[in-house]
Each structure stands twice: as C-alpha cells, then as structure tokens.
Image 1 (tube, helix red, strand yellow):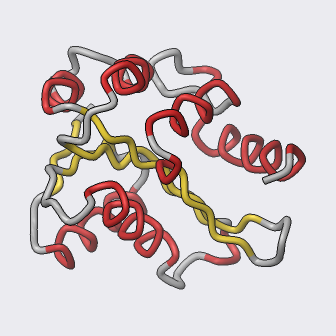
Image 2 (cartoon, rainbow, N blue to C red):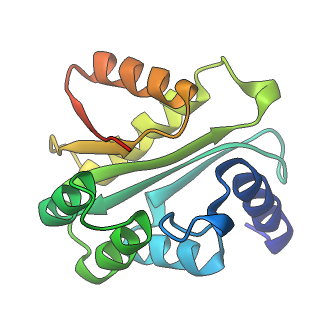
Length: 159
C-alpha cells in the first residue's frame, strides 16, 4: 500500500479515535502499524472501493492470556498492550482493537466481515478468547452481533 493511502487511513482514524489526546490508547501512526505487522501481516485488514480508496479497516492484535487479563483488569493501557504483544508474539487471545467504516459505507456488514476475517486468519482454526474495549454504541452493537454469530462470549474492558 502506498504512503498516500496509509496517510489517508491514519488521518481518518485519528480524527475518529482521537488517540493523540489520549496517552493510554494505541497511537495511530507508522510505528504502531510496523509493530502490528511485525506480529502478523493480517493484524490490519483493509476493504477498498478502488485501488487507492480505503473504505473500511480493522485491527486485531494477538496477545498472551496474561496481557489480555492485564488489559481487561485495567492494569495495562492499550498502548502497553501493543508493546507487550510485539515483544511476546503469542497467539493465545485476540484483542479486537479497532474497526472503522466510512459513514457512506456503513450498514453493509463490512465491519463484521473484516473482524471475522481477522479472527479466522489469526486463530488458524483454534478457538481463542476474544476481548475488546468498546468505544461507541455502534461498536457495542457490532460486538453483540459478532458474539451472537460466533456463538461465544467476547470479554469487554469497562471504563
């Protein structure tokens, strides 16, 4: 993917998630993208409407059970989660970190599709614990739907 497309994704993500003003969130920058790709190339999955027009993307981070528990118990931040996951490179649990769909493409199932694809690729056929940190009411609805369709619980960090 070219730098212009990556920069477009970064700007949209930053505007929505506001990570620059929250030191506990995973930053939306090239360093974070590099860390995620070092864990596995499918930690970030994109949907395009044309060769350079991203319309949706998801971020799923494989972690250890210890990192999952530390995050859910508010002992570590999301930023620390990424640093620990990068060092450990363990595939014991999956953190459903982020999913974003441009407003004009919402309601078409892309968010669920991207998360399901990531879970399938990263779990490699194993049933791994899933967890998340809900950011919006739409995110809560997505997690409820995904949990129902997968037939299993998705643990949530409550703030």
